[in-house]
Length: 325
View 1 (tube, rainbow, N blue to C red):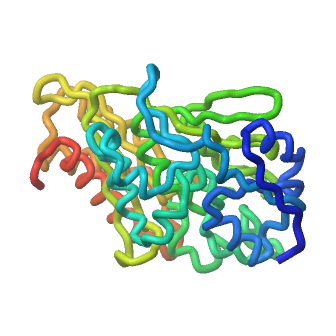
View 2: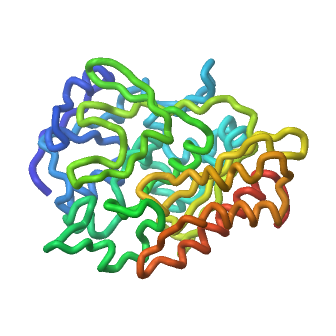
View 3: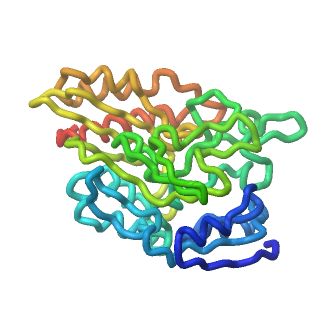
């Protein structure tokens, strides 16, 4: 780990003034569960670490006129146990349940989950987001069993966010602040697939901080279903988050989002459109699930992800609709 300057501001204004124009100038420390490992591995070497844990305006979960606002510093455990989240957004509760480690639930933050860097072992070993070495695409020619089955490159890592797919399905917006002002970006546009090693996998500049997320108060049935290799501390192999707007017993509109199968949460629009006007049954959920993975392009070692992603979609749809499969 390289030496660094440490700052612990008390206000968002102070924190923003401490950030720089480049990613190496300063790094934001919230829960620290990702940043510290990046620094220890030499993947990140910020000149300054800005601790934002004491900034009150970044904390809490509350109702607003725009919907439910979750502060960037809300912990995974707070999201998991919050009554408002459990009542209206089970997709988020289920995503939080997947974070099995009590330590990470209590330290890891909501904003940190959205901004965590890829878990790709080539990236963590210092080969960059696009993972090239001596002219070879490491994710294509190397061990790619946990890599993307959608997107087609050049980035082939998978988005690591546990909450990202659910937020995209729920139509959430991410609040972002810099010294020059504030902006909002749709969750579906916050996550991006970089085309170069110098880019980032989220729509965030070096001088910006995620301050919170607002989820509209839409009356949807929603759910998340994850498939993991083991129930202990691990990242999902595939995730599906769905949101259904119902008209009686039939689906008026649907959103289906796959996670951990692409560099950004993957919206399966065609599969969702198949459900319009239909009741969710084991048969219609199976049809939509097959459509959701129809355009998958697995690599040499991860074709198994196609089947488990399909299963995740079917089970998320059935869970959201309250149907036994």
